[in-house]
Length: 447
Image (cartoon, rainbow, N blue to C red; front, side, top):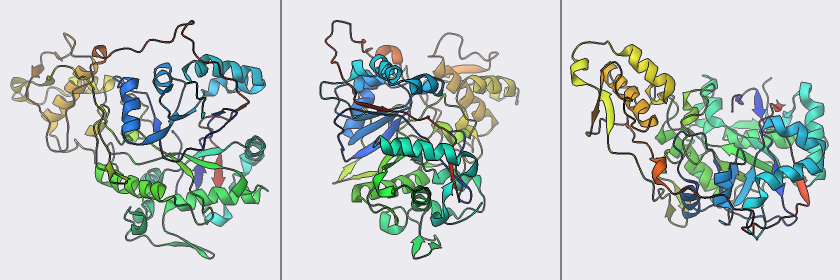
């Protein structure tokens, strides 16, 4: 997610592969992205249970992670799987190569029930001129294959990238439950847009129309949309709750956009936080989850029919211990900066940045936070709380206000799911269609 759209310029696509069985099941419900770039991930079986207990019956994976696919195999959850960019040429060369990849990476985990596997207005949207030929050929291929386009909408990135972006326009209006109290509508002919989600989606609809496609015959999936909770002044639980509740209300109500009345399939980004993701786009990149790294609920969300988010169950943690700056070292003045910097180079300190949840800590507490993040990532190993004799282990929780000093998941205490043996009777699946396009291709619609 290194490139992003802004209110005035671009909408970037994240065109994914969809693995389609000969009978596709159009299952209504909630959908989300499950990223696995975490140093101490929750066991896949616990994550699948978390998905099911919260009503998510569709999930998108960014790679064919064996543990995730194994746990999803008989869950009844519909799965979309992405492929790495370095395999695209090989897989696109022949259908046989694509089918072989599916057999090796997906089929063994499938249950017997099969697999579901410039400035302007939205009306002026078109594909960017330098990649227009490529985009038209990709869309034509997808349309001929009766396969959907998947693209991303990131109102947070629009707001964060442009200081002049109208803040309320990033959220949904009151009628959708998201707030949007002061958003000035963007008038486009007979249509008034009250939020950037609708405007971005309809810009793509316009681009399809301009290039000879019937948008009503090309399914459009919103592959990623969400709001982070930390790592930036605009990333916090309150704003994330406001945006995601408005989004969920739309999904539950089956609400479309002004130019496409049919509600699109939407994958919320993301399920859980990922502490080893690249932070090139920003420190917020590790905090998109609606759940914390351990499956704890970050903020309340109504899922409809009186249902609320529920946390993960069965997660096991390391010992209830933290590594902090010793009182003696703290009393001797600020001599710990180098040690804290070292800890942050190897662990996740993105919550310490300006506007983040731990931004109010003083220098000594900053060092304690850094020491503890390293200590947790190193699984409390002997020597991981030394820091030139500046660190000490405590059993007293040093968390302060909104700044949580976490205890990591003990991955060694969870049962490991074994891969199926060759004689395990893994079902054979015949694929009638495998449709592929690049994951995270920098293709855009330009107003």
